[in-house]
Length: 359
Image 1 (tube, helix red, strand yellow):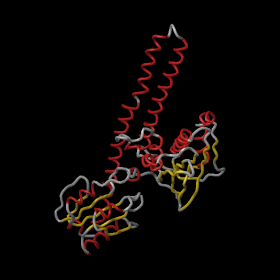
Image 2 (cartoon, one colour; image 1 turned 60 degrees about the vertical axis):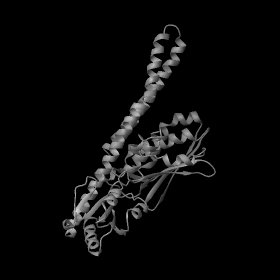
Image 3 (cartoon, one colour; image 1 turned 45 degrees about the vertical axis):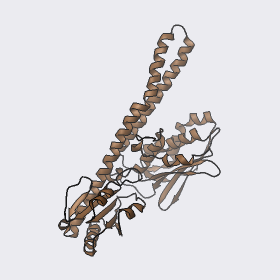
Image 4 (tube, helix red, strand yellow; image 1 turned 60 degrees about the horizontal axis):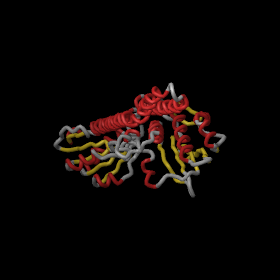
């Protein structure tokens, strides 16, 4: 886990010296800077790694505002430490009396505790969101296919002796509805297992993984008369093979669904700045400007009002971030879409609770 950025609000030279000393012991590679207030801190782009926000005798309102601030994924943004002469308990942040930070070693222990607390807060918020999402998807999204199964089965029972052809049509509807319900259950349960018990990354040649995803969609590709092109050579990455297959399967399925008739789809990759970018590009109508912001809505926020109905891209976003990467979308000129994901090109490490909490 990379060392955090530490931001200091308020305090004089003595407090700054103490904080710097504690930071250097707790996080040797951390960056340190002063900010004037919470507003200035909020104006900074949210970093992927943990940020520690240290207040020196600020108002309770400002500290609470920082503790309640969320990052773009809707999770607690900062590990907050409030250094004050009147320390009181607060479940959202680490509160320390000034005398408790009497040495750099003591300050380092407080900063480590703040980061661990922050990681647990993020994990708890994400898992709570997951449960709400699962509750909504199971109770709401399963209702339609299950209703279709029940209705069709009742009609099928009545028509069986008199209308064999009609029974066959209803049987197909029952099968389709059951298949829809099964797929929803499989995708939700897969996502829960991946988040609750993440796998450690290993060396994975990307080429065979792409071919497996493509073969899973071969029938659909033939039905749509799709043309799919891809490089002859792919890199080796540090990742989780089943997750990577699921990512490609979802992205390719998404392209086949939205790329229009006789779709032209191109897969590719590039390397820059110690990162691999993998992408799928189509020549469809693209995504409307107003809908682009919600394409990669985090899985744990799918229960919220007006959240997307599809699970594919939120699943991609979660699985990519569990492997230390990011996802994105770019329009293609004059028309079309490019969906991509980025993974580190450097060797990976087992996923820690702190890493899991970043999603």
